[in-house]
Length: 176
Ligand SMILES: *[C@@H]1O[C@H](CO)[C@@H](O)[C@H](O)[C@H]1NC(C)=O
Ligand SMILES: *[C@@H]1O[C@H](CO)[C@@H](O)[C@H](O)[C@H]1NC(C)=O
Image (cartoon, rainbow, N blue to C red; front, side):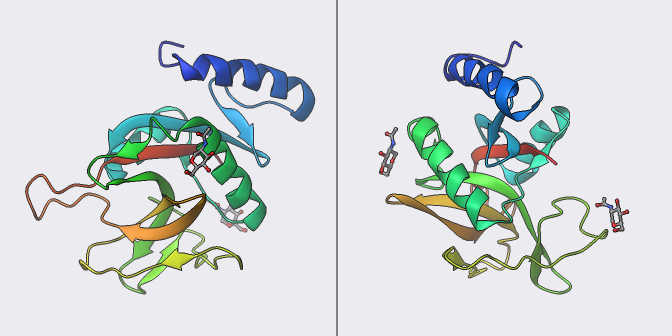
């Protein structure tokens, strides 16, 4: 409860309302596109973001349908435009569970359990995806707000090669 502050009070009220009509999400999570979601607004690297979600019994977000992508995007723009600007990334960005497997170079939603039930991410039509791996360390997937929509981009999860260069973002936790 101590973590539910400010805006989250509003979200919790919404959560309570949603509980009565759509089934149950854990405390502090809200229902978005049929999933239970909570945004961590602290600026964290990808590993830290995952750890914070795990503490809540959740994972990072698995954005595997176009419907959820659109609804999640609306939810984020309605609530987190101001709180989730990343000074290190210079954009409004969020960690998801997408993670590159370096042996295949494909992305999977299993953030930390890539060895089990591997399903290569097939991005639904209509989603703009930019996988450049331009620094050869861009192993995490972010949702990045580009004008009035979100796109998917690869970014370094935890760049320790260059001092103070770690990208820190808000994290989307999701109960799987
Ligand atoms: C992996 O797939 C098997 C068979 O479909 C399923 O029983 C199991 O729950 C899955 N494990 C995870 C972690 O998703
Ligand atoms: C969030 O930003 C987007 C893009 O600039 C804008 O279309 C939307 O109206 C903003 N939402 C709020 C609640 O400010």
